[in-house]
Image 1 (cartoon, rainbow, N blue to C red):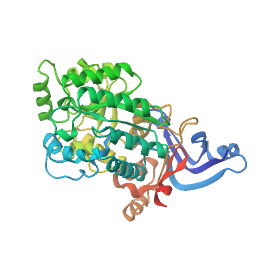
Image 2: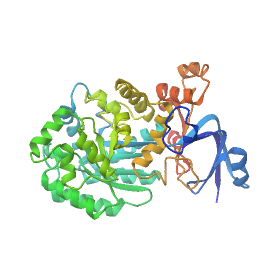
Image 3: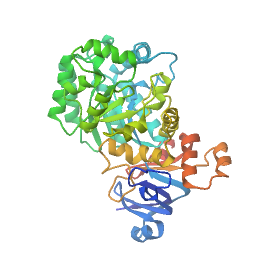
Length: 437
């Protein structure tokens, strides 16, 4: 069995870094090695030590002076919205009706779905993202296209067909029964196939009738090991409309709570305008609030209070994501750059180690997959990103004055994009190089 030995400056996280000087929160090797065999990391540490374990015939790849980190993880993205990104001038509900829903009708065509799935995962890899929690369209074929493309690449991805049976054009509607049946069939076909994970995906309370919400809850009860993903409290008009549709509810979160959709594998996109009761409900159930800073800024939705949610007496689990196409790019570096600004507007700061923890181990923990990805620990899947802090003229110039790892990470976050991603390994295979050839 052929082994691959990577050499470079390795960085991986053990836990949340409380401060910029919390060195025990991460493992950094100035001359590090990663030994990969059969798609997994089998040894990590100082290169001289790891090389001794490699044995004869190991393929050696020297990435010095670049940084090797776990592949980035994106906790919320809409793959059918690639041709919606950069659409002008609307808030959430108008944006959905004007741009998104018409675009998603195209995914009734399986060939279109396969093409966009291929291009979407190309973009993920180009930007250093090796795992994404993706929304497909309402069409079963769109989820089949996504999973087929993901499986071909041996990526660990989480995805689901959206369930939506009301308050949208006919071309993007299912029914409570067909939404259930299609989801059930997709779960049977794809969940656990290779590295694929299925997420039960009611789009949001506005586009699902009470009957469909019951079906989504039934799926969650029948498959308690699956993820559930939806949207929550992104926009004031959305919240008001939800309360009109579900007048019995105490608040927006209560709708999902009523139908049994809260839990440790439940991912709620946005969560900007939560009341204390709602925040407590998410906390008590271990549900995850997904921070989508570029989207929240672009659509004018509001500022996610990241540090307060972490610090509150009953903290909320948090993930971070691009959103696409409400978001403005595919890069987790760009996402955390905008996240830094959102947090600064709330009077707080996010240090660069915390940002890179969030993109890697933090998101892996939030998605309940940290035993497989998000670190460089021996025994985990070899999903790795190689970052070059001198990728552009502006970055090279700034690097002349950089003296610490923290400064380098902040430079990568602030000025970096896909050009800073030199290579990406998916289950040990060089995926960015393959894509270019």
